[in-house]
Amino acid sequence: MRIIDEPGDVTATLRAERAAGRSVGLVPTLGALHQGHASLVAAARAAHDVVVLSVFVNPLQFDRADDLARYPRDLEADAAFAAAAGVDVCFAPSAHQMYPGGEPVVRVDPGRLGGVFEGASRPGHFSGVATVVTKLLALTAPDAAYFGEKDYQQLVIVRRLTADLSMPIEIVGCPTVREPDGLAVSSRNRRLSPRERSAAAVLHRALVEGRDAAAGGAARAEVESAMAKVVGSEPLATLDYVAVTDPVLEIPGDPLSGRLRLLVAAEVGPVRLIDNVEASA
Image (cartoon, rainbow, N blue to C red; front, side):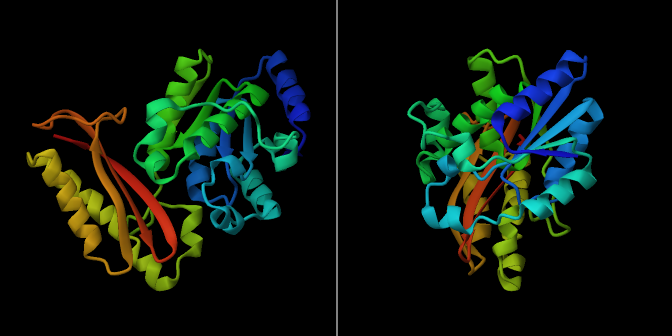
């Protein structure tokens, strides 16, 4: 596996691969790699000749300086993990290399999708995400890019970004990888104490309760109330929001019908966690 930190070098490397007729799959990450990332690499590996994984803790998408400072960084461990997972190119730039003039003057506006749910709780977050994803897609020009469904709102926004800006890149969503108790695998889980780690499974239990309620014919408010009640039963969890949406994050009317997406966000101890599941009514 080749590690590249200069944006111009990764562009030249991948341009040469495409010129030779090889397809390219991109896996964008913030590092702190885990089995969820490995599943994205596996999907890209199965479909492409060359897999490039980016490791970049993007300061633009952190709404709190303390959250950015605490984000785990260990490039040596991430590089070893990526190589073992089957990555060909690891693109690991610094903030200065990605933003040589400091914070960019021009940013990508995610529109109304960036101001709801996570966007309402974390102002500016999705503008930062959309901006860095646009840069990564421009630098690597992949045939497809792979994102986990755990960050479902991010996935929807990136799909709209590439469609609305006419980028000929397939955005592939991959299923959430979970621990045996249902907790979604996340780099943030590393910051949970053993007691908090046990409590964090309440997010998935809430989603399962909501999914069962929706399947049983409950109204949207009843589904959301059922999810909130489960989260509220855990003393270490502080609910931010629950929501019943459709697959593109529109709010469905009652009676609920068809495919749905249930969302939940909560703080468990000092750590903010999000999760979601598909549901139907």
